[in-house]
Length: 352
Image: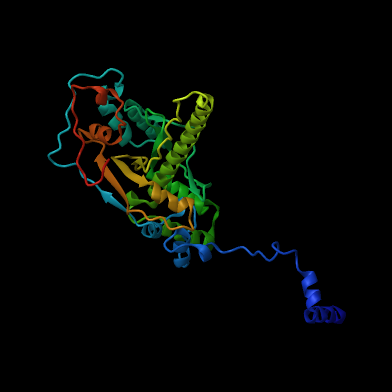
C-alpha cells in the first residue's frame, strides 16, 4: 500500500507523468455540458432548471398544474350563446343512420357499460360526421425531435383528408393510466400509502381541466407537423426530379416550394367513462413557434399564451348531437354538403 501511495505522490509532482496519464486531446477532456448551462432564458431547459424543486421532466401522464403554469397554458370553458338556434333537418339524410336513431345513441352513452361499448357508440357518431378512426396509429410526445413518450388514448381519428387531428379518451382511462404509472397495484402496507399520496398529487382538482388533455393536444399537433414535413419533403423531391428533367427545355421553371403551416388545429373528445352524461370537446390551435419549444428545448421560442377552449354538452340535451356536429365535423359530411341547410357556428372568443 505504501509503495502505491509513493507512486501516486511522485506522479503528482512530475508534470510529465501527469501529462502521460491524460487521454489524447479532444477526447477525455470534453466533459458533457449540462443543458441549462447553454440554454437561453425562458427556454424549456431554463424553465426546468429554474423550477428544480418541481419534477417537470416527466412523462405526460404525470403532468400537473405546474406544467400548465410553466407552459403558460390555461383552460377556458365556452358556452353556446343562448340565442344560438340549431336547425333541425326535416328529412333523414342518406348515409347517416345515426340521425335516424339519436335517442338510442344517447341511451347507450348514459347507461352504465364498459369502455368498449362507449367507444363503439362514439365511433358510430364520429363516422357519421366523416371522422374516421385510425386504430393502427400510436400517438407520441416528441422532445428534441425524438419520440420521448407514448401518449395513450382510447382512439385516434382523422378527417376526410386523412390527417390525424383528433383523439377520443375517457377520464376513467386517464385515471387508470396514472394508477399504472405509479404502479399502485404492486404495493402493500406503507409503500401502498406512499403511492396513494403520489397518485393524489397527480390527480387534477378539476378532472375536466386535466393536464394530460393538454399533452394529447400538443402530441396531435406534433404529429400533424411531422406529417406535413414528410409531405413537403416528398413534394420537394418530386419537384427536383421534374426540374432536372425539364432543365434542358427553355421556359421551364421549378415548381413552387410547399409552404409550411404556421398553426395546427387539434381536438379532443372526452367523456367520463362508465356513465357518460356529458360530452367534453376540447379544441385549440397550436402554433409552430410553440412546438419549437420542445424540438429545440435549449432555445427560446416566443409564442402567445396557450389557450384550450372546451365545451360541456349534456348528452340527453335535445340538440346535443347537433352541437357535437358543429364542433367536430370537418365539413365533409352530408349535413355540411347540403346547400339548402344552414347551420351557424357558435361565436366565441377562440376560433374553432
